[in-house]
Every structure is written in C-alpha cells, then in structure tokens.
Image 1: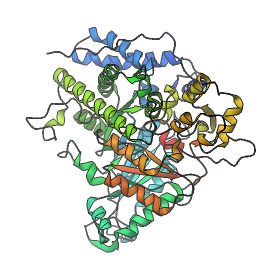
Image 2: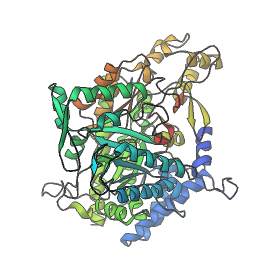
Image 3: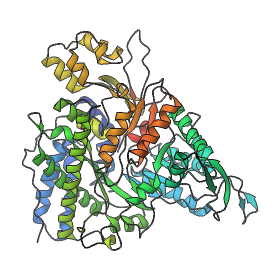
Image 4: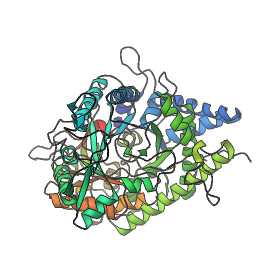
Amino acid sequence: MKLKFPVIDADVPETIDLTENARLVLEKRYLKKDDRGSPIESPEDMFRRVAANVAQAEMTWGNPRLVRLAEEEFYGMMARMEFLPNSPTLMNAGRRLQQLAACFVLPVPDDIEKIFDAIKHAAVIHKSGGGTGFSFSRIRPVDDLVESSRGRASGPISFMKVFNYATGAINQGGFRRGANMGVLRCDHPDVQAFACAKHDEGELENFNISVACTRRFMDALRNGKSFDLVNPHGGRIVRREPARKIWETMAEQAHAGGDPGAVFLDRINDDNPTPRIGRIECTNPCGEQPLLPYEACNLGSVNLAKVLDNGRINWDHLGAIVRQAVRFLDDCIQMSRYPLPQIAEMVMGNRKIGLGVMGFADMLLRLGVRYDSAKALETARDVMNFVRNEADRASAALANDRGPFPNIRGSIYDRPECPAYRNACRTTVAPTGTLSIIAGCSSGIEPIFALAMERHVLDGARLFEVHPIFEEVARQRRFWSRALIDRVARARSLSEVKGVPKNVAALFVTAHEIAPKWHVEIQAAFQKHVDNAVSKTVNLPHEATVEDVADVYWMAYEMGCKGITVYRDRSRTEQVLVRPAVPGTELEPTPLSCNRPELCGGI
C-alpha cells in the first residue's frame, strides 16, 4: 500500500509576513549573497529554494508526480511559519554545501592522532553550520603515565582547549559560529577540574559543558556515600570521593556562571533505540539530541502559536503539520551531503529525526493559561503526547512506503508487537533561538523572558523586542502607550506596573517570576512524551543560592529529565537576552536558552 501524501488545507501566502527583526536575521545569516555581501534572494526565494531542494527526495522512491506537490506543501508550511527546519537546512539546501543537519557527535579516543582527526572533522562540520558534541571521558587523566613516550598525560581539559581554539579559528568565517558540547563522566578522575573548567569567563568560550551523571553516582549521592573514580585507560580505581563533593562542585560552578549542566547518561541509554550499534556518550551542543559516535540528526520545530482556532487547539491542523514535517525531515536525510563517510553510514542506518515545538509560551497566552500552573502542565503533556503519536504514525507510514530504518534489526523495535518505523527517533525539543525570531514566536518551551527586551545576536547586533501578544492585549484593552513600555521595562514584574489590569499581570508572568520547580515540571512534562531529550534552561534570579541550583538538578533527575541546565541572573557579562537600557535603571542582561549566543542561537 502506498502512502497517501499528507496535504495541509491552507493557503500559500504570496508574500511572507515577517517582523523587522526576522528580516534582519535572515539577511545576516541565511539569504544568498553576492560577492559584496548583499542579499540576492528574498525570504520567499529562500523558502522556495529549500522546499524545491528537499522535495527532490521524492524521486528516490520513483514517484516524480509527488515532487511538485511536496514542494508546494513544504513551502506552504514554512511560509506560514507553521514549521521551520534547523538552520543548516535553511542555509544550505540547494546550495554548494548541501549539508542539512544541525547536530553531530564525534568520538574522542585516547589516541593523539585520532584526537586531532576529531578536531579536523569538527572543523568541517562547523564550516557547514553544524554543531558538535564530544565525550572526553576516554582520555586518560592528568599525570597518568603515557607508556609510548614515558611522559605524563595532560588530561582531557588540555585537549578541550585545543578543540576550542580550532573552533574559534573556524568561526572567523561561515554562516554562524561553531558550537560544541563537552561531556565528561562523573567517575572520571578529572571530573572536579572539568566542572571548574569554565569558571574564568572566556575560558572554553565555544563550549557548553555537562557532567555525565550515572545511576550509580546518583544512588551514591542519595545515600550519602563515596564513589569510585576510575582511570578510563585500564579501568583502575584511582580514588574514592564523596558523591556529594562532586555534586556540590557542579552546583557551585553552575551558580557562578551557568556551567556545567548535568546529563543523566543511563536514563538516556535506557531509551537508546539501537543499543546493538553502541552506547550513547554525548549530546549535541544544547543537550536535546543524544547521539552515537559519528551520528547526526536533522531537527525541525512546529510553531504551536499557529495551531489555535478561536481560543482552542486545532488538533487536526496540528496533526497535518506534524505528518508533513516528518516527511520533510526524512527527505532531508536523503538530500543531505554528509561531511564524513562514517557519518553518512550512521545517519542512513538509523535515520534519526528530531521534531519538536516552539511557541509554547505564546500558545499558553492565547489560551489564557498561566505558565506556572497545573493547566500549563496538562497542556504540555497533551500537546507533546499528540505530537509524538502523530510523528510515530507518520514514520510508520513512511516505513510502509519506503522501508524501515536499516538498523531496525536488534533495535528496541525489533519485536513482533512494535511497529516498524522509518526513523529510529522521531521527537526532540530544541531551543529554537534564531528560528523563533524568524517565526515571530516564543523560543522552544521557554516562558516569556521579558515583555520588553534586547536580544544580542549577529556579532553584536542588538534587536529590541516588545512581546507582540502583550502589545496586542494592551491595545485591545486600551491601556497601551509608549510610556507604558518604559514602565514595563523598568519593572521586574507586570504586577508592579500601574495601569495594567490584574488579570493581565497574572497571565503575563516572565521567566524570573516563575519558581524553579515549575521550570523543571514543564521540562519533565514534555520529556515524558519525547524520544530524545528536551532543551530548556532554568532561569534563576541573581539572589538564588548554590543550594537552589543543586535542588534544581536533583528535581530534574527525580522528575525524569535527561539533562538540565541553569542560569543565574547576572552571573556572566556576555548574554543572549537583555532588558532594554532605560535611563535611571540598573537593569542587567539575562539569558534565555544558554549563556553563549553562538551556542544556542541557530538551532
């Protein structure tokens, strides 16, 4: 039985409705340019280029009739801002690089030649707009004896610095800055030094870092016990340390500057769809996409703000977008040109995609639901459960038409009761930092950061933003004025602003007004219905304590998250989102998705 092509019953706009900031971002990063750096395509041209290129994959399965239909459907859902793929697809589809994936993980063995091979491979990936994750857990610790030279090992952090410098060099050109994730296991002898590696601002500036916490470590922490630190070269126990000591160092450093995050490694591998192929050791730079060594993934996000109809969720419309998006992402796998043969082999074997959402906070506002509420948790679970089920059905339908992913034998789906899927993974929630600017919606599943803010992107450019839904409500309720925005910018909470109705102030809560517990609860609600992981940052006020950070990390583990990051207000100077400069105030910059714009802005 052939798959019926999923058609979205909606008009295709002749011109795309974009904000001024969206157009600026597209001109700076995405649109084709001439030799002088001036754009030579419009946003409409860009989406048409992407749609036409990705639709060519339909020819692979011998159905030329569908190519034109696919192009129109793909163009329509992008032009209406219902769905956007990850940045490399927008940048590279139909162009020379033709590298469409955002997320990569490369292995780093305890071998000097192979370490520098990994640096070279990362450079090729960064040049094409991708981000890379590395586990440095296999590298022997500082001062370990190197038998071949009779010298002493310099340890994983020294090599991380080499990766960092190389990334910085590549960042001098290209579409966007390269991004890395560095992971070290909690049982590595250098874990304490690793947790402190970004203590000095500017160190490892091209890395996010996370400690990979095992179940054994978390059990030792729960029971107040010590924990073995093991040399990965030979497996010898080097020493024992209280798990609490490692945990406290992680919390202290995250409190000081946002790193390290925590990755719950065993939980990630519990959901590894292809354990026969290998264990997962690392994630992409923002933590939402765990991947095997040499694996890559194509991401895309559904804009939840576009699936509302008269104050209710239009489930039929959402389902149609999800089904179309799954087909688009599977076609991207076919059309992408991968930078290494090992990556192409892994991608084609597992065919992982990561479909997620953005605009969640906007959806809640349109529904009249406060972010930190039981109703918001219910909405999160219902929406992501629906997205996951529709994505699973779409992938199963594609498998029926095109065949399942080749590595399905020996996978978690290699059972009679399981459907055959085209894609080993289907769902992921990414931060969508830049995509949400293009779509004009809230980022990922984050709450509103501020109702008036500056966003620092594009090599120092500043984008001023007033939240469009707040402006819309203020105009409808007739309390809008330019003076109001100045008052809103000065205030820490809308409840402090004179002239704003109480029910409006109660609905439009911002990130720092939301208790950490609710940040984690929302992340956990989405994680329950996501194959891969969820990117979210718990934004903490400046006065938050080290104990508050440790509590957030523990809550994330207890609630079933696969990883967690925090950011305490004003703990670093260079940040993504900034309250606007208002005369007579001392408002400081505060981030949304991570503490480095180049590491989270372009997914």
